Amino acid sequence: MKQLGNLALVCANRNDILLQIYNGVATVHAGEGPDRETLTADWTDDTTVSKIIHELNFGKFQKNTASNHITNSGPSPAFTDIQKFIHEQIVKNNEDIQYWLRCENYIAEKFADEIAERNEKLEKLMTSEAIDENMITRLIETETDDELVVIYEDIYDEFFAA
Image (cartoon, rainbow, N blue to C red; front, side, top):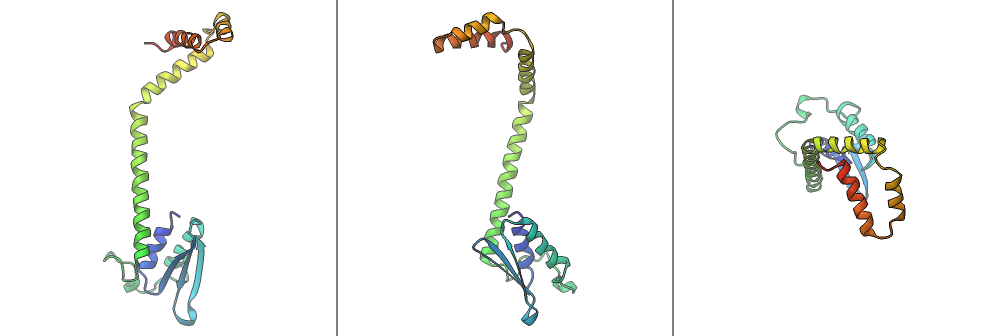
């Protein structure tokens, strides 16, 4: 579905192209009169949508004159409301994704040292003989949650306390 917005932009700037999106299928009508052809793709099939875009830009249906190339003068009249809506939603989704990626990177950078230190301590705990038979016996024989809390606090104090 990532390529659907690109297809909408390509079609919107072409008077000889009609894009129809209905019931999960993107249909492109290219050409005029008896030469008109129809290209279809499931709107989530980025590979097929990309092939249609390539065909419109560089293949059988490419524009041949300089006046027909896409310009930066804004959308043509063929840029319908639904195409605008789809484009806006794709842009909005992209902005949301970028925002969350920035948040994730910030958190990873902010806590990288703490995470590395915690992982180092956990590795030390896993490879040490600090949990001796006495500690295992205490864990097995524990009858209440309160006793478990005390044992876990002992382990924590030994390995994670500053």
